[in-house]
Amino acid sequence: MGSLSPALAPLHLAPAAATAGAGAFPLPRAIAVPQRSLLARARRHPWVRLALNGSFSALWTGQLISQFGDRMHQVALFALVYTITGSALATALAFFAATLPNLILSPIAGAYVDRWNTKQVLVVSDILRAAVVLLIPVAVLVNVAFAYPLVFAMTAITIFFRPAKTAILPRIVRDEDLLQANSALWVGETIADVIGYPLAGLFVAFLASSLPLAFWFDAATYLASAVLLAGLAVPKLRQSRAGDDAEGTGEALPTRTSILDDLRVGWRFLRNEPVLLANTLQGAMGQFAIGVIGAVAYVYADRQLAGAIDPEAAFSFLETAIGVGNLAGGLALGLLALRLGKGGLVIAGYLLFGACVVLLGLVSALPLAVGLMVGAGIANMIYVIPSQTLFQERTPDDLIGRVVGFRFALVFGSMALAAPIAGVVADALGPGIAIAFAGLLSLGAGAAGLMSRAVREA
Image (cartoon, rainbow, N blue to C red; front, side):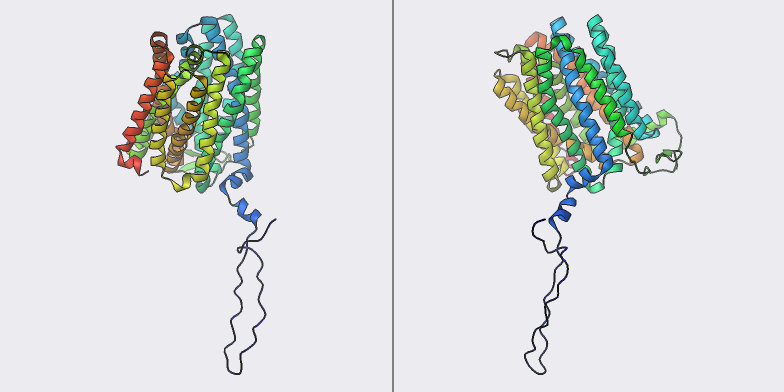
Protein backbone atom coordinates (compact mmCIF):
# COMPACT_ATOMS: atom_id res chain seq x y z
CA MET A 1 0.00 0.00 0.00
CA GLY A 2 2.92 2.37 0.53
CA SER A 3 3.23 5.12 3.11
CA LEU A 4 0.15 6.90 4.36
CA SER A 5 -0.50 10.51 3.51
CA PRO A 6 -1.95 12.84 6.16
CA ALA A 7 -5.51 12.57 4.89
CA LEU A 8 -7.09 9.29 6.03
CA ALA A 9 -4.82 7.77 8.69
CA PRO A 10 -6.50 7.07 12.06
CA LEU A 11 -6.28 9.77 14.68
CA HIS A 12 -3.65 9.20 17.38
CA LEU A 13 -3.52 11.47 20.40
CA ALA A 14 -0.11 12.26 21.88
CA PRO A 15 0.31 11.71 25.64
CA ALA A 16 -0.39 14.73 27.82
CA ALA A 17 2.70 16.83 28.25
CA ALA A 18 4.04 17.26 31.77
CA THR A 19 3.02 20.47 33.39
CA ALA A 20 5.67 23.08 33.93
CA GLY A 21 4.55 23.73 37.44
CA ALA A 22 1.64 24.80 39.59
CA GLY A 23 -0.73 27.09 37.81
CA ALA A 24 0.96 26.65 34.49
CA PHE A 25 -1.19 26.14 31.41
CA PRO A 26 -0.96 22.57 30.07
CA LEU A 27 0.87 22.25 26.79
CA PRO A 28 -1.45 21.56 23.85
CA ARG A 29 -1.76 18.04 22.57
CA ALA A 30 -0.27 17.25 19.19
CA ILE A 31 -2.73 17.95 16.39
CA ALA A 32 -3.42 14.74 14.49
CA VAL A 33 -3.99 14.98 10.73
CA PRO A 34 -6.08 12.35 8.95
CA GLN A 35 -4.27 10.45 6.21
CA ARG A 36 -5.47 8.97 2.95
CA SER A 37 -3.99 5.87 1.38
CA LEU A 38 -2.42 5.90 -2.04
CA LEU A 39 -5.16 3.54 -3.26
CA ALA A 40 -7.88 5.93 -2.12
CA ARG A 41 -6.18 8.82 -3.87
CA ALA A 42 -5.80 6.77 -7.02
CA ARG A 43 -9.51 5.92 -7.02
CA ARG A 44 -10.31 9.64 -7.13
CA HIS A 45 -8.34 10.19 -10.36
CA PRO A 46 -10.68 10.73 -13.34
CA TRP A 47 -9.08 7.94 -15.41
CA VAL A 48 -9.57 5.46 -12.55
CA ARG A 49 -13.15 6.61 -11.93
CA LEU A 50 -13.90 6.02 -15.61
CA ALA A 51 -12.32 2.56 -15.53
CA LEU A 52 -14.48 1.66 -12.52
CA ASN A 53 -17.61 2.96 -14.26
CA GLY A 54 -19.20 -0.18 -15.71
CA SER A 55 -21.28 1.61 -18.36
CA PHE A 56 -18.39 3.72 -19.60
CA SER A 57 -16.07 0.70 -19.66
CA ALA A 58 -18.61 -1.23 -21.76
CA LEU A 59 -18.96 1.70 -24.18
CA TRP A 60 -15.19 2.13 -24.45
CA THR A 61 -14.51 -1.58 -24.96
CA GLY A 62 -17.27 -1.98 -27.54
CA GLN A 63 -15.97 0.95 -29.53
CA LEU A 64 -12.40 -0.33 -29.42
CA ILE A 65 -13.44 -3.75 -30.71
CA SER A 66 -15.58 -2.45 -33.58
CA GLN A 67 -12.94 0.13 -34.58
CA PHE A 68 -10.38 -2.63 -35.03
CA GLY A 69 -12.71 -4.21 -37.57
CA ASP A 70 -13.30 -0.89 -39.30
CA ARG A 71 -9.57 -0.43 -39.96
CA MET A 72 -9.38 -3.84 -41.56
CA HIS A 73 -12.21 -3.26 -44.00
CA GLN A 74 -11.22 0.37 -44.79
CA VAL A 75 -7.77 -0.61 -46.04
CA ALA A 76 -9.22 -3.56 -47.93
CA LEU A 77 -11.86 -1.38 -49.60
CA PHE A 78 -9.44 1.32 -50.81
CA ALA A 79 -6.98 -1.30 -52.03
CA LEU A 80 -9.67 -3.17 -53.95
CA VAL A 81 -11.08 -0.08 -55.64
CA TYR A 82 -7.69 1.37 -56.60
CA THR A 83 -6.33 -1.98 -57.79
CA ILE A 84 -9.35 -2.61 -60.01
CA THR A 85 -9.70 0.94 -61.43
CA GLY A 86 -6.25 2.52 -61.11
CA SER A 87 -8.05 5.86 -60.70
CA ALA A 88 -7.55 8.42 -57.94
CA LEU A 89 -11.05 9.74 -58.64
CA ALA A 90 -12.68 6.30 -58.30
CA THR A 91 -10.83 5.78 -55.01
CA ALA A 92 -11.85 9.24 -53.79
CA LEU A 93 -15.47 8.43 -54.68
CA ALA A 94 -15.39 5.59 -52.14
CA PHE A 95 -14.48 8.17 -49.52
CA PHE A 96 -17.13 10.51 -50.91
CA ALA A 97 -19.79 7.80 -50.61
CA ALA A 98 -18.74 7.28 -47.00
CA THR A 99 -19.06 10.97 -46.11
CA LEU A 100 -21.97 12.21 -48.25
CA PRO A 101 -24.71 11.01 -45.84
CA ASN A 102 -23.33 13.40 -43.21
CA LEU A 103 -24.33 16.34 -45.36
CA ILE A 104 -27.91 15.30 -46.04
CA LEU A 105 -28.94 13.13 -43.09
CA SER A 106 -27.17 14.36 -39.94
CA PRO A 107 -29.75 16.94 -38.74
CA ILE A 108 -32.66 14.55 -39.34
CA ALA A 109 -30.85 11.72 -37.57
CA GLY A 110 -30.13 14.00 -34.62
CA ALA A 111 -33.81 14.92 -34.31
CA TYR A 112 -34.85 11.27 -34.19
CA VAL A 113 -32.09 10.40 -31.71
CA ASP A 114 -33.51 13.05 -29.36
CA ARG A 115 -36.88 11.23 -29.55
CA TRP A 116 -35.71 7.63 -29.35
CA ASN A 117 -34.19 5.46 -26.64
CA THR A 118 -30.51 6.32 -26.95
CA LYS A 119 -29.16 2.94 -25.90
CA GLN A 120 -31.42 1.15 -28.37
CA VAL A 121 -30.15 3.41 -31.16
CA LEU A 122 -26.58 2.33 -30.38
CA VAL A 123 -27.39 -1.39 -30.27
CA VAL A 124 -29.58 -1.49 -33.40
CA SER A 125 -27.05 0.60 -35.36
CA ASP A 126 -24.28 -1.89 -34.64
CA ILE A 127 -26.44 -4.83 -35.70
CA LEU A 128 -27.42 -3.13 -38.97
CA ARG A 129 -23.82 -2.18 -39.75
CA ALA A 130 -22.78 -5.81 -39.23
CA ALA A 131 -25.32 -6.88 -41.85
CA VAL A 132 -24.31 -4.25 -44.41
CA VAL A 133 -20.55 -4.76 -44.16
CA LEU A 134 -20.98 -8.45 -44.97
CA LEU A 135 -22.31 -7.46 -48.41
CA ILE A 136 -19.47 -5.12 -49.42
CA PRO A 137 -16.91 -7.73 -50.65
CA VAL A 138 -19.64 -9.46 -52.66
CA ALA A 139 -20.59 -6.18 -54.32
CA VAL A 140 -16.97 -5.28 -55.14
CA LEU A 141 -16.36 -8.62 -56.79
CA VAL A 142 -19.45 -8.19 -58.98
CA ASN A 143 -18.88 -4.53 -59.87
CA VAL A 144 -16.99 -1.81 -58.01
CA ALA A 145 -19.87 0.61 -58.56
CA PHE A 146 -22.12 -1.59 -56.43
CA ALA A 147 -19.89 -0.97 -53.40
CA TYR A 148 -20.65 2.76 -53.28
CA PRO A 149 -24.31 2.44 -52.18
CA LEU A 150 -23.31 0.00 -49.46
CA VAL A 151 -20.58 2.34 -48.19
CA PHE A 152 -23.21 5.10 -48.24
CA ALA A 153 -25.55 2.89 -46.18
CA MET A 154 -22.82 2.16 -43.61
CA THR A 155 -22.35 5.87 -42.98
CA ALA A 156 -26.09 6.53 -42.99
CA ILE A 157 -26.45 4.09 -40.08
CA THR A 158 -23.40 5.54 -38.35
CA ILE A 159 -25.02 8.98 -38.50
CA PHE A 160 -27.61 7.72 -36.01
CA PHE A 161 -24.96 6.02 -33.87
CA ARG A 162 -22.66 9.05 -33.57
CA PRO A 163 -25.04 11.60 -31.99
CA ALA A 164 -26.47 8.87 -29.75
CA LYS A 165 -22.97 8.16 -28.42
CA THR A 166 -22.33 11.88 -27.95
CA ALA A 167 -25.66 12.29 -26.13
CA ILE A 168 -25.30 9.27 -23.86
CA LEU A 169 -21.81 10.07 -22.60
CA PRO A 170 -22.77 12.97 -20.25
CA ARG A 171 -25.42 10.70 -18.75
CA ILE A 172 -23.09 7.85 -17.77
CA VAL A 173 -20.10 9.84 -16.47
CA ARG A 174 -19.71 12.64 -13.95
CA ASP A 175 -19.66 16.22 -15.20
CA GLU A 176 -16.10 16.72 -13.97
CA ASP A 177 -14.98 13.60 -15.89
CA LEU A 178 -16.53 14.55 -19.23
CA LEU A 179 -13.40 15.89 -20.92
CA GLN A 180 -11.36 12.90 -19.74
CA ALA A 181 -14.13 10.56 -20.96
CA ASN A 182 -14.02 12.12 -24.43
CA SER A 183 -10.25 11.87 -24.33
CA ALA A 184 -10.42 8.19 -23.33
CA LEU A 185 -12.79 7.38 -26.22
CA TRP A 186 -10.44 9.06 -28.67
CA VAL A 187 -7.47 7.24 -27.13
CA GLY A 188 -9.29 3.97 -27.72
CA GLU A 189 -9.92 4.90 -31.33
CA THR A 190 -6.27 5.77 -31.86
CA ILE A 191 -5.18 2.48 -30.31
CA ALA A 192 -7.21 0.87 -33.08
CA ASP A 193 -5.40 3.11 -35.58
CA VAL A 194 -1.94 2.28 -34.25
CA ILE A 195 -2.48 -1.48 -34.14
CA GLY A 196 -5.27 -2.05 -36.65
CA TYR A 197 -3.86 -0.23 -39.66
CA PRO A 198 -0.47 -2.04 -39.70
CA LEU A 199 -2.23 -5.39 -39.37
CA ALA A 200 -4.66 -4.39 -42.11
CA GLY A 201 -1.82 -3.31 -44.37
CA LEU A 202 -0.04 -6.63 -43.91
CA PHE A 203 -3.28 -8.52 -44.48
CA VAL A 204 -4.01 -6.68 -47.72
CA ALA A 205 -0.44 -6.86 -49.00
CA PHE A 206 0.21 -10.55 -48.35
CA LEU A 207 -3.23 -12.21 -48.19
CA ALA A 208 -5.05 -10.47 -51.04
CA SER A 209 -7.00 -13.59 -51.99
CA SER A 210 -8.59 -13.60 -48.51
CA LEU A 211 -9.74 -9.99 -48.47
CA PRO A 212 -13.39 -10.86 -47.74
CA LEU A 213 -12.21 -11.98 -44.31
CA ALA A 214 -11.52 -8.34 -43.45
CA PHE A 215 -15.21 -7.50 -43.92
CA TRP A 216 -16.42 -10.60 -42.09
CA PHE A 217 -14.14 -9.75 -39.18
CA ASP A 218 -15.61 -6.23 -39.07
CA ALA A 219 -19.15 -7.64 -38.96
CA ALA A 220 -18.21 -9.83 -35.99
CA THR A 221 -16.79 -6.83 -34.12
CA TYR A 222 -20.01 -4.86 -34.62
CA LEU A 223 -22.00 -7.71 -33.09
CA ALA A 224 -19.61 -7.88 -30.12
CA SER A 225 -20.04 -4.14 -29.60
CA ALA A 226 -23.83 -4.49 -29.70
CA VAL A 227 -23.72 -7.09 -26.91
CA LEU A 228 -21.64 -4.79 -24.70
CA LEU A 229 -23.81 -1.74 -25.38
CA ALA A 230 -26.96 -3.67 -24.50
CA GLY A 231 -25.70 -3.79 -20.91
CA LEU A 232 -25.31 -0.03 -20.42
CA ALA A 233 -27.06 1.42 -17.36
CA VAL A 234 -28.32 4.84 -18.52
CA PRO A 235 -29.83 7.27 -15.98
CA LYS A 236 -33.06 9.08 -16.72
CA LEU A 237 -32.71 11.91 -19.20
CA ARG A 238 -32.43 15.39 -17.74
CA GLN A 239 -34.66 17.60 -19.83
CA SER A 240 -35.20 21.29 -20.38
CA ARG A 241 -38.91 20.64 -20.92
CA ALA A 242 -41.45 18.28 -19.43
CA GLY A 243 -41.56 14.69 -20.51
CA ASP A 244 -42.77 11.27 -19.54
CA ASP A 245 -40.64 8.24 -18.85
CA ALA A 246 -40.59 5.80 -21.76
CA GLU A 247 -42.18 2.77 -20.17
CA GLY A 248 -39.57 2.41 -17.47
CA THR A 249 -36.63 2.45 -19.88
CA GLY A 250 -35.00 5.44 -18.22
CA GLU A 251 -35.70 7.64 -21.22
CA ALA A 252 -37.81 10.73 -20.68
CA LEU A 253 -39.65 11.57 -23.87
CA PRO A 254 -40.13 15.21 -24.90
CA THR A 255 -43.49 16.70 -25.74
CA ARG A 256 -44.34 15.47 -29.23
CA THR A 257 -43.78 17.97 -32.02
CA SER A 258 -43.08 17.56 -35.71
CA ILE A 259 -39.58 16.66 -36.86
CA LEU A 260 -39.42 19.99 -38.70
CA ASP A 261 -40.21 21.84 -35.48
CA ASP A 262 -37.54 19.85 -33.67
CA LEU A 263 -35.02 20.77 -36.35
CA ARG A 264 -35.91 24.46 -36.02
CA VAL A 265 -35.35 24.32 -32.26
CA GLY A 266 -31.96 22.69 -32.70
CA TRP A 267 -30.82 25.11 -35.38
CA ARG A 268 -32.08 28.11 -33.39
CA PHE A 269 -30.06 27.02 -30.37
CA LEU A 270 -26.88 26.52 -32.42
CA ARG A 271 -27.32 29.79 -34.30
CA ASN A 272 -27.75 31.77 -31.06
CA GLU A 273 -24.84 30.12 -29.22
CA PRO A 274 -21.81 32.13 -30.46
CA VAL A 275 -19.11 29.77 -29.21
CA LEU A 276 -20.70 26.63 -30.68
CA LEU A 277 -21.59 28.32 -33.97
CA ALA A 278 -18.07 29.69 -34.40
CA ASN A 279 -16.62 26.29 -33.50
CA THR A 280 -18.84 24.64 -36.11
CA LEU A 281 -17.72 27.04 -38.84
CA GLN A 282 -14.10 26.44 -37.81
CA GLY A 283 -14.72 22.74 -38.00
CA ALA A 284 -16.21 22.98 -41.49
CA MET A 285 -13.03 24.69 -42.72
CA GLY A 286 -10.61 22.46 -40.86
CA GLN A 287 -12.33 19.16 -41.63
CA PHE A 288 -12.15 19.91 -45.34
CA ALA A 289 -8.45 19.14 -44.92
CA ILE A 290 -9.29 15.81 -43.29
CA GLY A 291 -11.51 15.01 -46.26
CA VAL A 292 -8.73 15.73 -48.73
CA ILE A 293 -6.22 13.57 -46.87
CA GLY A 294 -8.68 10.73 -46.45
CA ALA A 295 -9.60 10.79 -50.13
CA VAL A 296 -6.09 10.85 -51.64
CA ALA A 297 -3.87 9.32 -48.94
CA TYR A 298 -3.66 5.97 -50.73
CA VAL A 299 -2.88 7.68 -54.05
CA TYR A 300 -0.32 9.92 -52.28
CA ALA A 301 1.37 6.81 -50.86
CA ASP A 302 1.51 5.24 -54.33
CA ARG A 303 2.57 8.24 -56.44
CA GLN A 304 4.52 10.58 -54.16
CA LEU A 305 6.05 8.14 -51.68
CA ALA A 306 6.85 5.44 -54.25
CA GLY A 307 9.89 3.51 -53.13
CA ALA A 308 10.98 0.15 -51.85
CA ILE A 309 7.69 -0.74 -50.19
CA ASP A 310 4.22 -1.41 -51.53
CA PRO A 311 1.65 1.42 -51.49
CA GLU A 312 -0.49 -0.64 -49.13
CA ALA A 313 2.35 -0.68 -46.60
CA ALA A 314 3.13 3.02 -47.10
CA PHE A 315 -0.55 3.88 -46.66
CA SER A 316 -0.72 1.82 -43.48
CA PHE A 317 2.39 3.57 -42.13
CA LEU A 318 0.74 6.94 -42.70
CA GLU A 319 -2.49 5.89 -41.01
CA THR A 320 -0.55 4.36 -38.14
CA ALA A 321 1.49 7.55 -37.74
CA ILE A 322 -1.56 9.77 -37.41
CA GLY A 323 -2.93 7.20 -34.95
CA VAL A 324 0.24 7.47 -32.86
CA GLY A 325 -0.17 11.24 -32.86
CA ASN A 326 -3.83 10.94 -31.90
CA LEU A 327 -2.88 8.63 -29.03
CA ALA A 328 -0.21 10.99 -27.73
CA GLY A 329 -2.49 14.01 -28.08
CA GLY A 330 -5.44 12.28 -26.44
CA LEU A 331 -3.39 11.10 -23.47
CA ALA A 332 -1.80 14.51 -23.01
CA LEU A 333 -5.16 16.28 -23.10
CA GLY A 334 -6.64 13.85 -20.61
CA LEU A 335 -3.87 14.70 -18.16
CA LEU A 336 -3.30 18.40 -18.80
CA ALA A 337 -6.35 19.97 -20.46
CA LEU A 338 -8.05 20.95 -17.20
CA ARG A 339 -5.38 23.64 -16.87
CA LEU A 340 -5.96 25.07 -20.34
CA GLY A 341 -8.81 26.96 -21.99
CA LYS A 342 -10.77 24.90 -24.51
CA GLY A 343 -11.04 27.75 -27.03
CA GLY A 344 -7.30 28.33 -27.07
CA LEU A 345 -6.69 24.60 -27.51
CA VAL A 346 -9.00 24.50 -30.53
CA ILE A 347 -7.20 27.42 -32.18
CA ALA A 348 -3.75 25.98 -31.50
CA GLY A 349 -4.83 22.59 -32.82
CA TYR A 350 -6.01 23.94 -36.18
CA LEU A 351 -2.85 26.02 -36.64
CA LEU A 352 -0.54 23.10 -35.86
CA PHE A 353 -2.57 20.71 -38.00
CA GLY A 354 -2.50 23.09 -40.97
CA ALA A 355 1.26 23.54 -40.75
CA CYS A 356 1.87 19.79 -40.67
CA VAL A 357 -0.47 19.14 -43.61
CA VAL A 358 1.08 21.86 -45.81
CA LEU A 359 4.53 20.34 -45.25
CA LEU A 360 3.13 16.84 -45.84
CA GLY A 361 2.04 17.84 -49.31
CA LEU A 362 5.55 19.03 -50.14
CA VAL A 363 7.63 16.05 -48.99
CA SER A 364 8.31 12.82 -50.88
CA ALA A 365 10.29 10.85 -48.29
CA LEU A 366 8.31 8.32 -46.27
CA PRO A 367 10.08 8.99 -42.93
CA LEU A 368 9.33 12.73 -43.18
CA ALA A 369 5.73 12.03 -44.16
CA VAL A 370 5.33 9.68 -41.20
CA GLY A 371 6.73 12.31 -38.80
CA LEU A 372 4.37 14.97 -40.14
CA MET A 373 1.42 12.62 -39.81
CA VAL A 374 2.31 12.08 -36.15
CA GLY A 375 2.28 15.87 -35.69
CA ALA A 376 -1.04 16.12 -37.51
CA GLY A 377 -2.50 13.44 -35.24
CA ILE A 378 -1.45 15.31 -32.11
CA ALA A 379 -2.95 18.52 -33.50
CA ASN A 380 -6.15 16.69 -34.42
CA MET A 381 -6.77 15.72 -30.80
CA ILE A 382 -5.92 19.23 -29.60
CA TYR A 383 -8.93 20.65 -31.45
CA VAL A 384 -11.34 17.68 -31.64
CA ILE A 385 -11.62 16.76 -27.95
CA PRO A 386 -12.18 20.30 -26.60
CA SER A 387 -14.69 20.97 -29.40
CA GLN A 388 -16.73 17.89 -28.53
CA THR A 389 -16.60 18.74 -24.83
CA LEU A 390 -17.79 22.30 -25.47
CA PHE A 391 -20.90 20.96 -27.21
CA GLN A 392 -21.67 18.51 -24.43
CA GLU A 393 -21.22 21.18 -21.75
CA ARG A 394 -23.19 23.95 -23.44
CA THR A 395 -26.11 22.01 -24.95
CA PRO A 396 -29.19 20.82 -22.98
CA ASP A 397 -29.46 17.03 -22.83
CA ASP A 398 -32.70 16.87 -24.82
CA LEU A 399 -31.31 19.06 -27.63
CA ILE A 400 -27.88 17.55 -28.07
CA GLY A 401 -28.85 15.12 -30.83
CA ARG A 402 -30.19 17.89 -33.06
CA VAL A 403 -27.44 20.38 -32.25
CA VAL A 404 -24.57 17.99 -32.93
CA GLY A 405 -26.53 16.73 -35.95
CA PHE A 406 -26.32 20.19 -37.52
CA ARG A 407 -22.65 20.37 -36.59
CA PHE A 408 -21.98 16.98 -38.16
CA ALA A 409 -23.87 18.03 -41.30
CA LEU A 410 -21.66 21.08 -41.78
CA VAL A 411 -18.38 19.59 -40.62
CA PHE A 412 -18.61 16.17 -42.23
CA GLY A 413 -20.45 17.67 -45.18
CA SER A 414 -17.33 19.69 -45.94
CA MET A 415 -15.36 16.45 -45.80
CA ALA A 416 -17.74 14.91 -48.32
CA LEU A 417 -17.34 17.84 -50.71
CA ALA A 418 -13.57 17.66 -50.29
CA ALA A 419 -13.35 14.09 -51.62
CA PRO A 420 -14.29 14.58 -55.31
CA ILE A 421 -12.45 17.91 -55.44
CA ALA A 422 -9.33 16.25 -54.05
CA GLY A 423 -9.64 13.39 -56.54
CA VAL A 424 -9.81 15.76 -59.52
CA VAL A 425 -6.89 17.87 -58.27
CA ALA A 426 -4.82 14.77 -57.48
CA ASP A 427 -5.32 13.38 -61.00
CA ALA A 428 -4.54 16.75 -62.62
CA LEU A 429 -1.81 18.24 -60.42
CA GLY A 430 -0.77 15.45 -58.06
CA PRO A 431 -1.91 14.39 -54.60
CA GLY A 432 0.72 16.53 -52.86
CA ILE A 433 -0.75 19.75 -54.28
CA ALA A 434 -4.23 18.76 -53.10
CA ILE A 435 -2.93 18.00 -49.59
CA ALA A 436 -0.93 21.24 -49.30
CA PHE A 437 -3.97 23.28 -50.33
CA ALA A 438 -6.01 21.53 -47.65
CA GLY A 439 -3.42 22.47 -45.05
CA LEU A 440 -3.81 26.14 -45.95
CA LEU A 441 -7.55 25.89 -45.22
CA SER A 442 -6.84 24.45 -41.78
CA LEU A 443 -4.47 27.33 -41.07
CA GLY A 444 -7.34 29.63 -42.06
CA ALA A 445 -9.62 27.92 -39.53
CA GLY A 446 -7.11 28.58 -36.77
CA ALA A 447 -6.63 32.20 -37.82
CA ALA A 448 -10.41 32.73 -37.87
CA GLY A 449 -10.58 31.51 -34.27
CA LEU A 450 -7.95 34.01 -33.23
CA MET A 451 -10.18 36.81 -34.51
CA SER A 452 -13.17 35.71 -32.37
CA ARG A 453 -13.07 36.72 -28.71
CA ALA A 454 -15.84 34.25 -27.85
CA VAL A 455 -13.77 31.37 -29.25
CA ARG A 456 -10.52 32.51 -27.63
CA GLU A 457 -12.12 32.71 -24.19
CA ALA A 458 -14.28 29.57 -24.36
